[in-house]
Amino acid sequence: MADTENGWQQALYDHLRSMDVTLFAYVPDAGHKVLIDRSLADPGAISVPLTTEAEGVPMMAGHHLGGGRGVLLMQSSGVGNCVNQFALIRIGRFPFVTIVSMRGEFGEQNAWQMPMGQGVRPVMEAMGMHCLAAERADEVIPTATAAINMAYRSNAGVGMLLGQRLLGAKAF
Amino acid sequence: MTTERILDRKLAVPALIGDPSDLLIVAGLAGTAKDIAALTDESPNVFLMGGAMGAAVPFALGLAYAQPARRVLAVTGDGDLMMSIGILSTIGVMQPPNLAILCVDNGHYGETGYQAGHTSRGVDLERIARGSGIATTHTVSTDADYGVAAQSLRNSNGPAFVWLRVTTERPPAYKRNFDAVERKAIFRRALLGQA
Image (cartoon, rainbow over all chains, first blue to last red):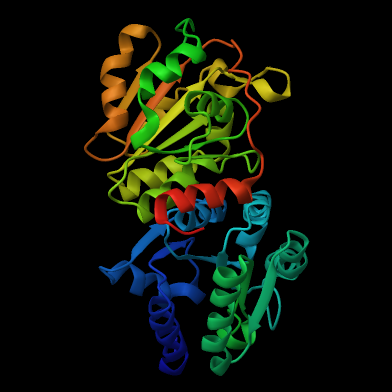
């Protein structure tokens, strides 16, 4: 990944930490490499590898119950693994932020990524969540601010979608 | 496991947990929610699931990371735990020092008509927990097993897992509160001083 692309990812990590996010839970994705590596190296953060994204949804809700702030990092395919757990976010009006690296949209070369990539917005919105997309590097920080404020001030579930225009499409 | 199930959850759960007032307790949907509601009268240190099957243990892990000075207890049924069984591996990897898991295993899906579950067909949850990297594990099948398991729920070097095998005797009848927003606010006000 080029340095210019790394730039917004580094800034995003610093920004999340400046907004009191200390818990990072993830299923790995290339689009989240910098956030994952930074969180693992950060003694002030807790970085939790998950076996499925579905673990991360209640984990974030429980963290809020105890007064902490976290974000769940996943690829678009992971959204499908979470659907019934989103019920907990909605029924408890828990603040919830997930940063979703999108596949299956702009320039995707692997057809297997298309169904869930296209499904992210309708699925999340069907479960009462809000989706905020970032398609350019200069949109990333304002979108993260909006997502965290909507979650923690409005008790909302928010998906921050990092689009493939921003991330680039993987070549196959 | 072919060991006969003889324990009644209405006696075994209180015997293992003891005084619940100093714990932060998360219980899964259905049976374990009733076990804990009856034990605590839904005190402010308790959060009960009413759905989102599989949520209790990962929710408790998130809570444990927010409250490192408190002992967090996840009480989960066998069906609830099977639905997020990978969380045992996550806990094995992370080794949270303040999290204990009590699995109340009646071997059946009690809420839906007592269909047989995997643990009544040979699945051994203690071995899964141990193989997931949780070193402190106990199987509780008789009342002679309570003592050391109860101690591990309170204090362990790393996370603890207790597999409580009970009969299909029903959980306590308790009309628990299903309003998760209200329960969240009660819990947070008591713990943090703010909703």
